[in-house]
Length: 255
Image (cartoon, rainbow, N blue to C red; front, side, top):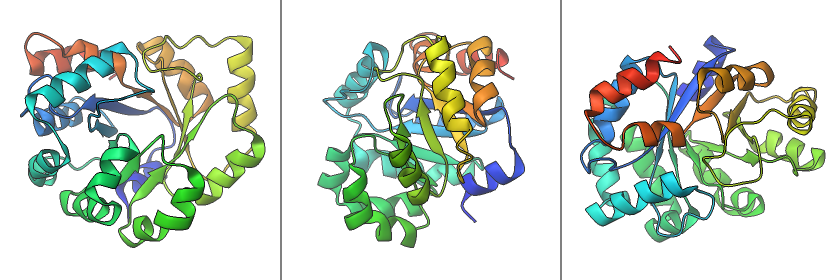
């Protein structure tokens, strides 16, 4: 069974997923961060593979991606680093990034490399749904990889149900149609949006991301979904200083 599926079967609420950029703050930190986050109580991890034109990322994650790229991070190096991942980490791990590097690597080669590294799912925000369905779904399913789709406040019910039918892990509910790093502000409009999706009784679990940066905002997200995803706040927390201590301190707020 896929680890993502198993997680949501065993834990229904307050699931905490942490995003971080591969090769940041140090080029060799990728697996060490995963190990430390698991030890500190993270339920799931999203490792971002950097790209030179990260249009959906805010300034913090953009800066981390540029630093990692400048240090030499790419998919070949990332997969080489991840060979050590499953010796130390047992929780679900996803890769998140843009479609261009995946296409350059080759979708089938990318999926095979994910399996060899023990990766459970992939989030590629700019991979069109119809392309996934027509060209790549069979490859993902053959490799037991979850492909995670994103939903925004503007996504229609028809499209959400289509996404639900194509999904086999969870649905990533964006708190706003904006770049990462914005604060989660649960206004009446956002509450209506979250409630609308929750009331659809979808087959797949829901995780809320974008703007979760504190225990308060994490708990708000968990009122409407199975859990929350933290990215920018964590990347910012490990920019400087002692990496292991920064991770412990950051996670203490949530665990």
